[in-house]
Length: 274
Image 1 (cartoon, helix red, strand yellow):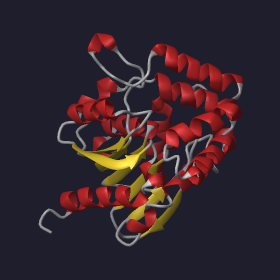
Image 2 (cartoon, one colour):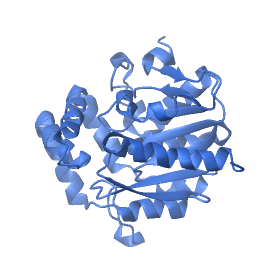
Image 3 (cartoon, rainbow, N blue to C red):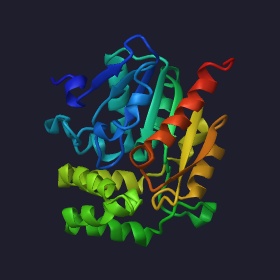
C-alpha cells in the first residue's frame, strides 16, 4: 500500500518547529502554484504542501473514481496527511474548490485545525433562486462548460485558463495556468470538474467552528463578490478581506497582497498583543 506521503507527493519546508501551515491547491493546479507566497511564511511556519490525487506528482494509480466522486474523498486525503504527519493546530490555507474540502475536513475533525484561510471560496457555483443565492452561473452555463470540457479538454483549458486567471496584462500567468491544466490527466479532470462545479456545500458552512479568513478577489468570474460575502456570513466568527487582486488566483497574480492579508490575519489571531 502506497503511503499517504507518496500518494499525495507531500513536501515539508520552512521552520521545523513552527506552527503548521497546510496548503491545498485548486482545480487543474498542483502545490507549485503556492510557491510565490511561501517565502513570506518560511521563517516562522512549518509549510506542508501536497498534490491532490490526479494532479502534479501524485500517484496516478491511487485514483479511484468512486472515492473521488465527491469532496469527501479529497477531504479524507487531507485528513490522512494530517494524521500521518501528526499535524496539530493546523492553519489550513485552501484555494477555490479546496476551500470547501477544508470546510468538510474542519467539520469532520474540528480539533485538528486552528484556522482556515479560504482563498476565493465558493460553496456552490450555480445560482439558486429558491434560496436567493447567487453563485455566478446558471445550470445551463455549467452544463455548457462541462460539455465543452468533455468534447475537447485541451481546447477548453486554453480558453478557460486566461478567464480564470484574469490579469490580461500579464499573459504569462495565464500561460502558466494553461500549462498546469494541460498537465492534468483529462479523464481525471473531467471527474474533478464535475465535483467542483456541481457540488453544494452551503449546508456545511454553519457547522464550521474553526475561525476562518475569507479572501475575496475582485472581478473573479468563478467566485463573485456575493459569494465571498455569503461564505463570510455563514461562517461564524470569520473575517472577510476584499483583495484588490483581480481574477481567481491571487496567490499567483498578487502574491504579496495575498501573503500580507494572511500574515495580518494570523498575526492578529496568534499574537493579539503585538
